[in-house]
Length: 528
Image (cartoon, rainbow, N blue to C red; front, side):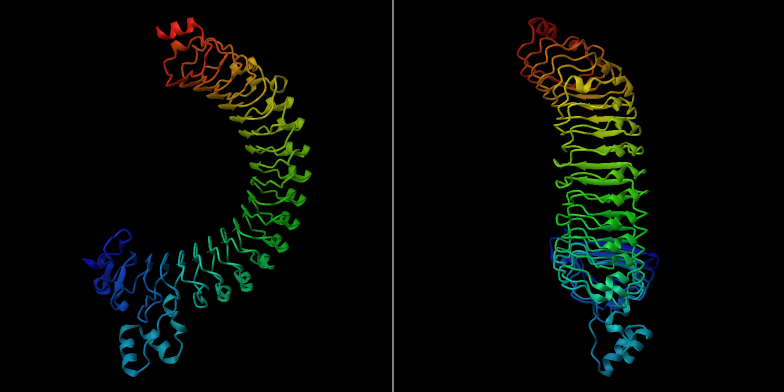
């Protein structure tokens, strides 16, 4: 029967008729064991005292109420999700105080609730939420100040994401000593956090991303020593408090798109548990030398930091770094010699910088699998140790300025290489050792305008793109490329023949548009 039902979910978000949104509280009266109720965009009508007292989880997106009625007395409620609702306060409406009303209230509510009302200990209508552990008020745009949360002492997770009119966090938040997770992402009107915020000594996750007017952090941020993750992306933060160094448990710090942030404090080097630091699209000019002390750092992102000119010599001491991304800064033109000490790197992206040369000991990065150096148009030569990067699976050297001497490598060392991008370079030929790459699948040579010939290619290739290689005259017989699916010689105006093309059985896409110099012999073979 209905007593065995523990969960009900309805969603009226797509309902066109407003009358279809109505639910009556009496319909829940017999569901004494109901623990989970999802009633999104419903208009729940009637006495809320009929709602099952054992309800633990209430999801009511689009709740039409501005505040809760006095008989909303779910004393065991642990999860309340009111996302995108009209709610503007959590306090219940006070009932009339005449004797008759009090008797009715006594009947409808628990003895404890009536006692609190009669003695004045009703906690301003907040008593129904004393067991609450999770509260989600995301997208509740009627809040200008967050509600008084003084009595929600069991709260573990609090979310206010995308509450666009929220300008202030109530000072009472400092009372939530059990709070572990706080997210206020996308609250574009919020300018500051209250000083009491640093009293949240159990907080582990703090998400402030997208609070575009938030320009300062509490000076005593370092008091929040349980913090594991802090996300400040897309904020107006101008500086990070020196006290951040006290956050010895902090594992992830994200400062992407902080275009007012120009530097990090030296105390950043004291974040002994930090594994991830994201600075992408920020205005930072440099990385402090103390970063060399971050022995647990595994991921560092600094894409499109156009003011970043260098990394410190101490950077080589970040011995456990696995992923490094520094891109989009023409001011960044040199790597320190210590860079080669990053022997645990497997992903390295140094694209679109001003680098003109790589350290001669660059080959020491022997765990590197993915390497992106594209867009370094001052890079004319690779170091002789480059071929020691034997774990490489992908190399992107697109739009560098590599000439014949700059790419004279023994490619036979790259036994794991699958993708090689050499678009837009200045060489006229490629090393013959290219044929010794047993796993090469994709070779890209777009707009290599000086390229005149190709060496024999490995049979593993599935895609060969030589688009607009206008000087390309000769290619080897490609009949061995039995796995080739894509072949593009568009606008190769000097190309005379594609020997072996007619034998390719896996080819799915062939582009020869603009190949105006193809011989009549080739055309006859293809027609046959």
